[in-house]
Image (cartoon, rainbow, N blue to C red; front, top):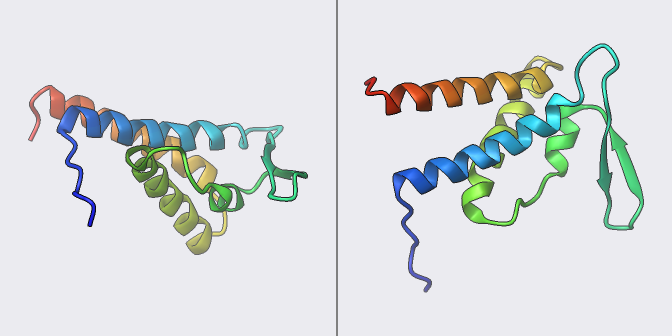
Length: 113
């Protein structure tokens, strides 16, 4: 049985923030007056153009390390639930969640309880 890996607070926060920022940066391109597209390469090798935030996050499987995946999967769950309950708005929920996380981390570092 593999031994569990314990990660300290500064490293865990950095990795969590990386995953959150990765998803928020990806989805930020899809909203606005023109609405950009995200290109995903399928297993068959064909590119797939996506503009729906819930579909985009469902296609994300792995960011390369388990620590980074935690932040990405947290954002994935948020965007997917917003899409399920409201129908739209997941692309806007991701940058808002990133801003809340970054401001909360700044306040905690400054000594807020």
